[in-house]
Image 1 (tube, rainbow, N blue to C red):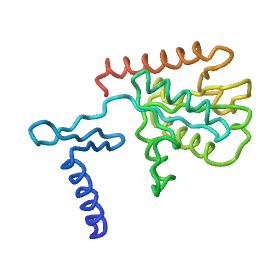
Image 2 (image 1 turned 180 degrees about the vertical axis):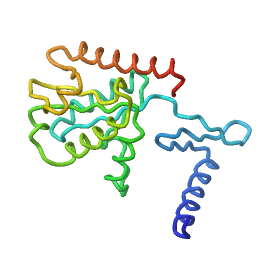
Image 3 (image 1 turned 90 degrees about the vertical axis):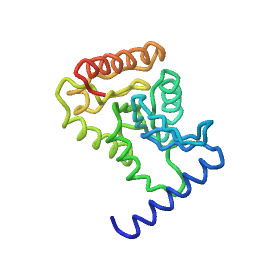
Image 4 (image 1 turned 45 degrees about the vertical axis):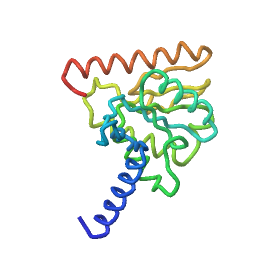
Length: 192
């Protein structure tokens, strides 16, 4: 570890300790929550909720936010840039990290996201790369259509998509069923 990395780590540790000494809680995304207990000690509560990365085009942010809230309400740990990125954070690296540690990647397709160049396409390609390293029967990438549109051929060829229209609730229940079935299969195999 370089001197700069040690200094940075030491600074972060001081900030965390200062917050805990003042009675505050410190959440480290993807890791868990540090909080003081009644005896003056620090308690760590690990984050055990399955992580779901939401990929979307900025024009479809309201649909992604609705999914984010629904996943949160259903006991999952959703991740979307507008809710999780911090000011000054290296966002390309943070997004790549969030995708790689996610249990599931939900791609929101619409007539706006499919032809658009940019970050949504990069995230999708990275998720396809992550999915390629998993066993063939593993559910990781879940394509979701937020409206009538054509899903890219590469995605359509390998993954079954879910429609959130005309019945959003029915579509969301199908997503939850797929995720829960995969989580049960992982549990039977002894995975987290």
